[in-house]
Image (tube, rainbow, N blue to C red; front, top):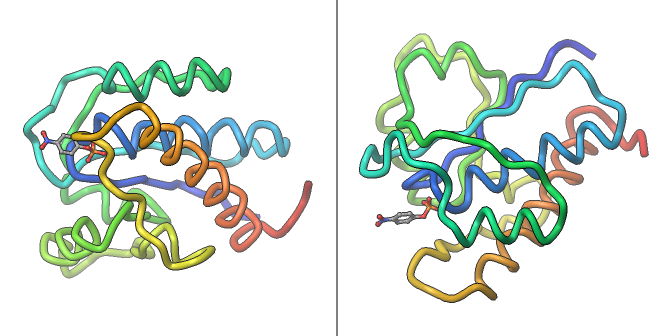
Length: 154
Ligand code: 4NP
């Protein structure tokens, strides 16, 4: 398998996509995959430089998933640096298509397209149970993505 470079994208890059990044990296590590790079970003810059939301950090801690990220906005070079750009919801996907440069080489899609076509709903204005739901989705979507791209090597 050639190297995989995966970018998970949401709106603010403090709730869903840093969790997705942490979970996908952990799932890949547990499968023994070493040739995968995982990062995350937001379509917006409101939270650039911030750590993940406390609720994302505590949900990852609860599931013993290491998480460390500084929020950043999508940049033009991401579209040629990454092999796969996975959007959390349709609004993020539309925004990616809007800013995509002509020379983009990444495969850009809804992360959910590897499983059930469902979006990862924004948990920002809700409670902790929304973050647990995001975690469960990220776990299932990480397995579905790796099954689809690498093959089921578990
Ligand atoms: P995220 O969640 O896109 O999963 O990081 C959000 C974070 C911040 C805001 C919206 C969604 N916000 O409006 O500030």
